[in-house]
Length: 95
Image 1 (cartoon, rainbow, N blue to C red):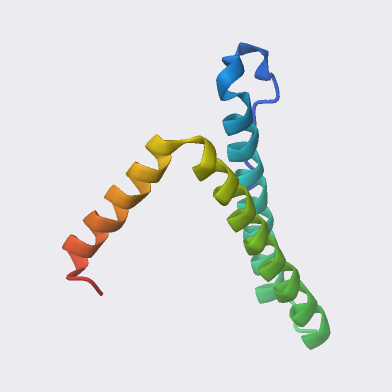
Image 2 (cartoon, rainbow, N blue to C red; image 1 turned 90 degrees about the vertical axis):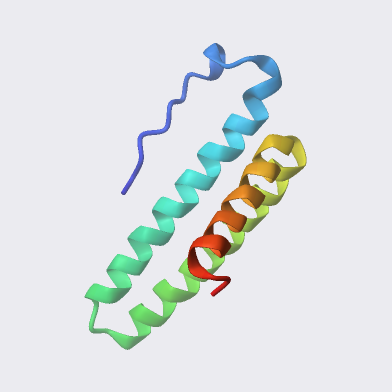
């Protein structure tokens, strides 16, 4: 949890900066999801649990937003996601 995200984007090729920003943003959102779900599982307060899970759901939406933008910029990522989906389908028999 709480991944270390390199903040020095000066070493990244100019044409890749936006993709790196989006990937770092996705990582941050996934970390937040993990943190909030862990806290929700620890609390015994039903109201706190409810709010934490609601915020978790919002963070999942943020992941989707950043991923949609990333997929617009990185066609290789689009293809590799599809390859991964196919591999899982083959391994699990489509389940």
